[in-house]
Amino acid sequence: MKKIIITVLSFVLAVSTSLTAVASFDDVSDDNGNVDAIDFLSDAGVVKGYDDGTFKPKFEINRAELMKILVEAQGVTPDADEYSDCFTDVTDQWFAPYVCYAKDVEWVEGYKDGSFAPDKFVNKVEAVKMIINSQGFGEETGACKEELHEDVDEDDWYGPYLCVAYKKGLLEEGLDGNYLPGAEIDRSQVAENIFRAIMVKKLKKEEFKAEYKEMKGEALDAFKAEKEAIKAEIEAFKKEIEQMKEDGEDADYIKAQRDEFWGNLKELHKDHVEGLAGKLKEAHDHLKGQKDAVKEEFKACKEKLKNGPNGQGDLMAKCGYDFDDFEYEKEDDEDDSDDLTDVDDDDSDDDDDDEDDDDDD
Image 1 (cartoon, rainbow, N blue to C red):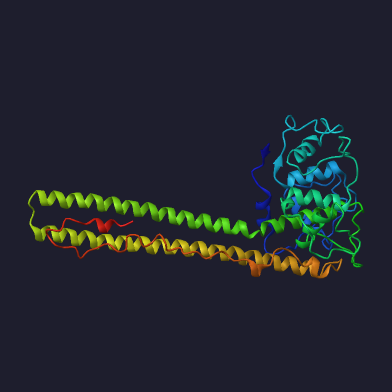
Image 2: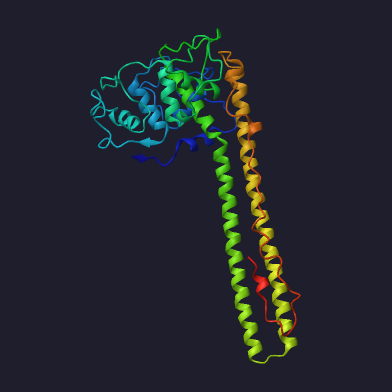
C-alpha cells in the first residue's frame, strides 16, 4: 500500500480554533448543518463533489463510494495492481482498489455469497460500522451500557458499533429521539460522521501522552549520555592522579588538582541537572499547551452543535473526551538526575588512593 504525505490527523490542525466555514460547493450553504464537515473533507481531498460544482448532500451513497471516501480519509492510495478481484462483483473497476483494501484491513466482509454489492445504497448502521472500523475504534466494541435511541435494538448486530459511535458523539439524531437505523444514509451525513470520528481521534489522550513521553525520553537520553561522559572524565582523572603519584609530584599540587577537578565537575553536573529539569518542564508545558489548544477548538465545536439547526442537544455537544480525565501520569523525573551529585571532595588525604566512591552509579 502507499500512503500520501499528509495524513488525516494532520488535517485536523488546519481546522483552527474556529469551526466557521465558507461553503466549497454551490449547493452547500454556510448555514447548512454539515458545512464544516463537508468543507473539511473537501479541503483534505477526501470528497470532491461533482463537475457542476455541487456536492449533492442529500444524495444517497453506495457501498463503493463510501469505501473510496473511508480509504482516502486515512491518507491511503491503494495500488490497483495489488488490490483487485476480492469479491465476485469486485474485479478491476475504479472502486476495486478501495474495496479490496478495506477488505484486506478487515473493515468490511461482504456477503455470504462472496459478493460485495458495490452499487447498493448504504444504510445508517452499515455506514457507522464501516466508519468505526476504519477509524480504529472497532476494538472498543463490547457490551453496551448506554441507553441508545428509542428505535435502536442494542442486541442487534449493529448494537456494539452504534454504542461506540453514540459514546463518542458521532451520530445525528432527530428531534423525536429516533435514529432510524435502517434508513439510507446521505452524503452529508457520511461527511459529518467521518469528520466527527477524525476530530475525536485527534483527541485521544494517548497521542498527547506519547508525544510527552517522547520528549521526556529524549531529555533523559541526553542526560544519560552526559552522565556517561562525566564518568569517563572521572576515570581519566583517576589515571592522571596515579601517574602524578608515580612521578613523585608534590602532595599539595596533587590536592590542588583534585580540588579543582571536583569543583569543576560539580558545577558541570549541576548545569546538566538543571538542563534536564528545564527540558522536562518544557515537555510538561507542551502537553498542557496541547490540551488547552484542543479544548479551545472543541469549545467552538460544542457551541455549534448545541445551537445547530437540528437541535441535537447534549448528545450532539459531545465533541470528544472528558477533558477533566485528561492528565499525564506525573512520574519521578529526577530519578536519574542524582547519580553523580554525591561526589566526594573531602577525600584529600595524600595517601588515600581510593576514589571509587566518586563513581557511584
